[in-house]
Length: 332
Image (cartoon, rainbow, N blue to C red; front, side, top):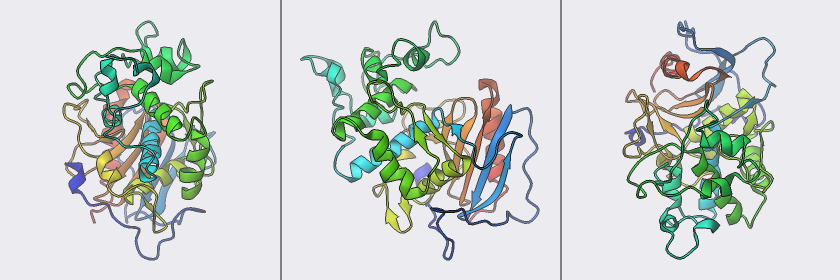
């Protein structure tokens, strides 16, 4: 569905925003859509045809403010895996080499990196953000698992056969992050991200958080400005190419936006560590807890970044508002 929409190239004569964002004007008569109660928007940045054309911040925030990604980090993790695939250090169809699954007869050893990226591993997991008594993700990030998030996630048993059921899991993302670290020789994930992704895109503000075991908590923790999150969105809008050079392997963005069977949830579907939005225009997004979004709209050459404080109840209306915002820009 989404992969049928072509990804536009950087327009001729428009500088890449590696140092500074080129500025432009939105379409004549542009205004933000009317909004119901969507919680608090602390930062909003809109890129159209490669230029920053609309930006606003709540009091106390500005272009230099850094924001917590929450699960937008999962899509950044997808980029890291792509870089390692590009360099021949990871293969997505191979079984994931998880130390706790190496015992003879452990059925989890058959789970592939692809299944982890698509949230179809079959591992038991409770992704609950409000009830610490039942929430595996809260326990992983802030409780028993916080010092070694990947090992915590690796303890969980199979609930379903791999590829049989889709189930969103921050635990599987941290398993992927640990796999990336082992592919790099047992460490240096944050430095590799900085050198191979953030520095190449000019994401000077971007920082990550790792646990005591040295694993980047790729489920949840990237800190960056709205403009730098927009740079990340532009990389995916441009099919993984930056300044004429391929950062992500050919076809990697299409892989991210290929629908995972059975993944429909709240009107969305899931690809590989990216969400796919309805509407027939190939819109895909990096979504994070409390209303963090990077919307990528190839049919209109738009990236829209919204960072704020919203409840789960706000989420469907907030996504609808972002789709309406993107639709204020003409199709290519």
